[in-house]
Image 1: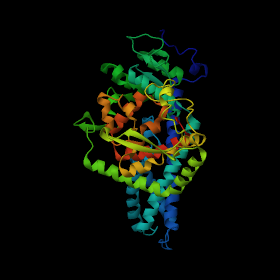
Image 2 (image 1 turned 45 degrees about the vertical axis):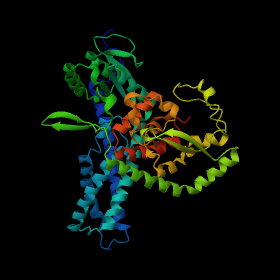
Image 3 (image 1 turned 90 degrees about the horizontal axis):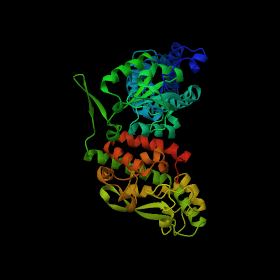
Length: 484
């Protein structure tokens, strides 16, 4: 492959020198930081004024304007907690991911505000006012950040990225980025190693040059980020590649060699300057299981009570729409291989299970039944599946302890028999109503990938990850992405 030349490139024709491109990249990143900071400041101001004027406990001698002096300090706390830097470092960062750090920063900011109120003319704040400030600040900042990120996405557009490497995980990453435009990453091509010279790699990306041509290719194509597959680059070349990326102001995302089996919950440890990756133990402590079970029971029971009128209405609608029982019960495989009966609102004709073997011949995935148009689904069933309302009776399975709010997908016995070896670790936790499979695309995810996601969920379980997946389930359900 010939060396990529700058002459005749889009950058050269438009009169943009490499220095101008560097300035554009820095300007885009800076603009997003400033938009987030201004939105945070406005949200915190509203929360402060509201807490000092709307609380029934507020004394008449409060001076709300003096409270605004604390806004810069809270903004500094947000900066210390990394709330303005993770968007640049991470590909998949979202407002939901900000919530733990936002909560911590707001608690510390509230304590500082209370001390400030004691020795300033604004007037001393009481507990109710501080609580009102904390709750409203977290809610307003979260809404403001979500809005700003949406605006920035439309203003700035997707990042152009280069892939360095062509291993199996590189192919998987490219496919996932292509299937999820919300990450705003446009992988335009790849840089190959001098040892190989295919014009097109296994990932379907055009090879735009070699690693040695990074500067020319990045400048020519307006690249803002490189995605580096650590296992495909020799260690002696890695430092040089990172140095050159830094000189070009390129953001770098590194796909480590062990990402296929470690998952996202790896902790970066430091032992006297030596980086060590801390991996979760291969078992879940009893305290964690008890905490997960307690959250499941409280959330499921609350939803059952609040949704009881809807459940009654749906039951009547199912009975009127077509003949047959209201509920559909099916045997599924739960934790440690134990069988249980999963409940759903019936969305198919009564003889649906008897017709399953003949329809499997037309399935787009041989491992399970996946049809573009399933003839067994009733008229109402299409709507129930589209909004995932058919799964509401599974809340009773959660209350009984047979299922969890978040967990691996509950498989039927025939599907479970196909899961062997290391992947059997997926049944170490109770199956869930939602999980990675539900959030990342449902039926658009192949069976093997679903099994791997379930395994990684079990190996990397955390309470915050359960909360994060539940928060992300709502928007996915509304969009109806991947509904079968």
